[in-house]
Length: 142
Image (tube, rainbow, N blue to C red; front, top):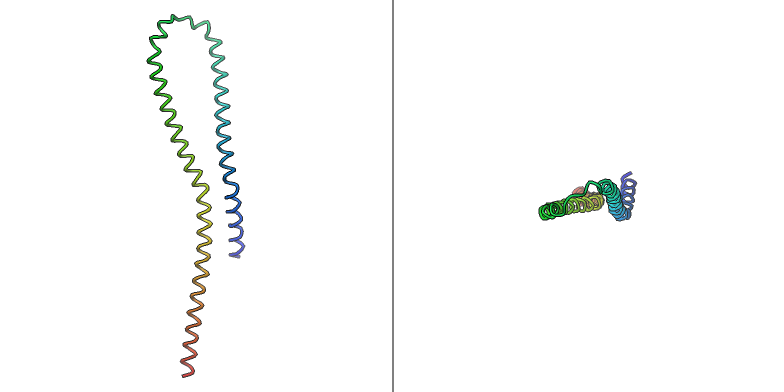
């Protein structure tokens, strides 16, 4: 029974080790695809807004140039904040991907190591029993 469980766990572990890089790549590509779809949707909405607000944008050029440096500083700050958030999310995603990959491997090694330990303990116990039987036979013969 233990051998069957060990074989099932070994097959599952090997299958996970073989499939996990593909799953990680699929996850990354799917995330990029979702970002692309969002960007396309935002660009469509932006063009709709720009078409609707062409008649409203008859402001003098001097007013927009006065507000431009402040808007630039604010947009650069927002850009850096967004980049920091993206970097943190990427780091967390990378850590989670490594955990998903290494935890099953470590569990498998733990099971194999424990099984080897049980075999070792059984061999030591058998050697001790044989030694005690020899001593017992020697004590009977004397």
